[in-house]
Amino acid sequence: MAGRVLDTNKLIRHWKRFRPAGEKTELEAETWAKRLILIEATDAIVTPVELEMLGGDLNERDRRLTRAYLKPFRVIDQGRVIREDWEAARRLVERIPRGSAPRPRGLVDCLIIAIATRLNHEVWTDDQGMPRA
Image (cartoon, rainbow, N blue to C red; front, side, top):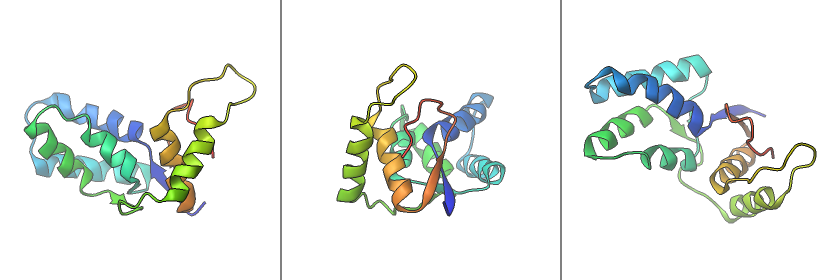
């Protein structure tokens, strides 16, 4: 694979360490994101990751900070989720893993994998149950 795409759980885990420390500015949120990019050695995400992050906002202040946090990341699919991505995601959702106890496959996780795979990237995640392409 040519590169790595950060999964939402990487961003959320990092974001949660930033948030509890009181009032933050948009510049601080952006700087915090740049720290994660250095740690993980990639700035790549895909549209479903961006949307999952924005979906956690509870108010306008959160939204502004989340948007600032996402600003340094590069959405490698540029918001273009194509038919082939949905078809690949469907195959992943429908595939029942062999071996250990089967787990439900989440649509968003499967779509993240499908887009990343199409763009020659692997998904960098802490989710042990993440489906594999």
